[in-house]
Image (cartoon, rainbow, N blue to C red; front, side, top):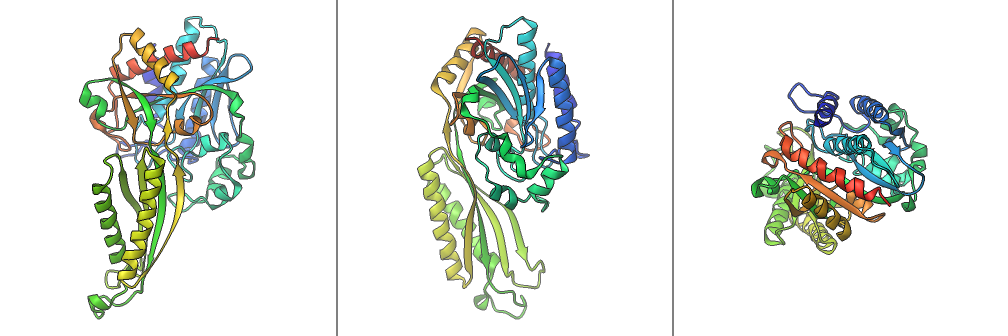
Length: 403
């Protein structure tokens, strides 16, 4: 039955395929909506009752009434991303259901296969799972903008959804018995250790902050360096100070900058305003907060020394989450029973699982990533690693759906 799994992965990769070899299937784009339609059909063909909720989450359900065992991930991609991030988890859940059904498995508990909308944060990080857990406000929806400047409100409408009804996607925590997510590792650890499968112990927290430095645009040829109010210079010194802090801090800390904009966009004008975003990741919420606050102080200090002003605002924060110990033990037991050696590791990337960890017992299965590559066209996982991970997922779902 592995042929159906790999066939589905290849079919899904057609939606949003780039000429460069990558995939651009950002949330609520035409390619994303087409992929949702294809997925609904594949789920229905497998025997699942399907629907799309008010937040754009694709849901397939089978079994009796009551709390469900959820196998979920996402099918949206970053721009020019890969074919495995998120998509593998959704298709793996569907394949696991098909295998269980084929062997006559009795579902004492319902199973739900879910593809969450906008996990990647084109408009709003982990949007679909946040909405399902009641963690999105109308104000946040109204303020959210995509990478190309389109509002989330407009994107939802173009995708056939009503932005005023997103709250209807909210479900009670009592709806969920357990949650399992299969995902590619997106890093090099499993490959380096020679392990095909990993069991996730915890997921890092992520805080994204926007910093704006405002100076004064002047002629670059006539204004001496020591008389400038150069917003870009302040931003550069701030970034350097943050990297120096990160190197001296806990090795678990991750730091990145992006979404840089400079105005005016002229080489012969001193930059008058620079806006950039900072991403911090750490498994300890206290350290994450402390580094964020130190970053604010450093921004103010760099700006003051160079005669410019600095402002900042937190755009999003995903709290760190520990995976349920009993779920980890169950997945270990499943792997052992199948003769599969696994490795415990933390996730340095955010996942919908970290939100569900607050709602029900939650676990994650990682699949080895070739070369540790992800969020790029070269993203891949060995077929044998995928097969082993799907076998573990299938056995885990079998145990969880029996009373």
